[in-house]
Image (cartoon, rainbow, N blue to C red):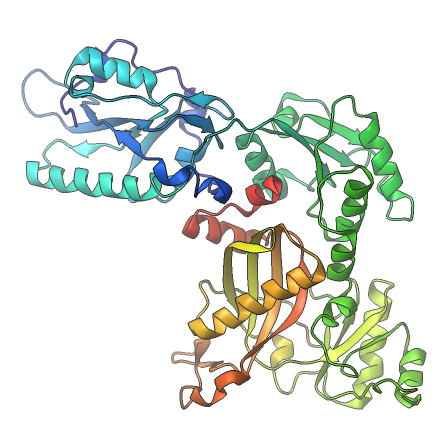
Length: 533
């Protein structure tokens, strides 16, 4: 490291980098974490490392007497050639960095090629060498102020800690790829209702050098061709999005009218998953099978991925329920309600009209509630008693690239005395899960197998389930705090009985309260993975 060189004395400082305006310098440096492009890990990522060269500058100097504060700037140079996979890699890898950062300047944008800087001792021990290094840097970080009175020993500890943290963050995730990534254009069916909801998608697309075309109703906020809107999308195609039998054909016609090629189609709107898959399939674009999405959005069909005959039923009315309960089996396993059970719409979201039924007297009421809300049939299924979890998967060709599990504390309907009017609306999530590792492995393997059995191979999935015969339960752990804890006796008698029971499959990234903690904890950007799929 070269210490004591003033960038103000070095020709060419500061380098002409992106994010170098006054506006960008005050922009929160870390928004969404990078998408670790795992396909490149084996072939290229392991060889990637960074040179770091540190220079010290004074923010305010005086010819005589101590300086009140010092500031360090550090150029970064990958040691291998390659093409930039994501332009905001550095600022995203440095989110929540434990050392104060004043400014990040990223000098190479996707999909440009970066040529590695070859360092020598003269590169960092002369003014001209340092100037050349800065000119070739992929990025420059300006660290926060340090008190000038800091001791040499404390400064050494500071620099060692900073360097170790940087190397852990930058050398363990691929940033460059060995081959150029062709620029692609994706159509987003149903733009998000506002920038807050759509921001993670638009930012990820921009960083990955993807062009977005929004397909939505006339009057959507992204339709006007303003400078602000052009930051988030390349184009907008006004289309009648009425959810009828012709919506897929209208979207296909809109895409065909667009003057530039569309390379992929996606949506994050639950009620458009099947439509988006049909559009992609009709246009010959990459997609999971339409049947997989049809299974995921139909809670009766997804329940049958795991259910035994006679335990689940589908009815469209109370009259059909009564017929079902009184009709002979006709050679098939008769439907026999085992209480408590769950009644919910076959198509729906946000736990709307989901009821726990504990007595035969409440069954008809729950069916009426479920069939009247969304105009769909109702599914009647067993209630699985055990901790509820949310699991998130990133799959590539059926294999897990990343997964995590979160605990969902009990809601109103989980009470033993819950009525049909109590809801399953989630109130909180706890990450990471407190379930034993063995039970988490059961969750992982079971849900991955169910996703593949449904027909999904590649993408991001948010899956809800329950763990039955768990060694843990929710109880008061003291001070009025209800948390997941080992059952009395440690749950050692559960043995091989532990099982994971599917609630529903969502073929999209998780919501805000999960996606944000995940990217801050693991550096995984679910939305970037979704776009790359």
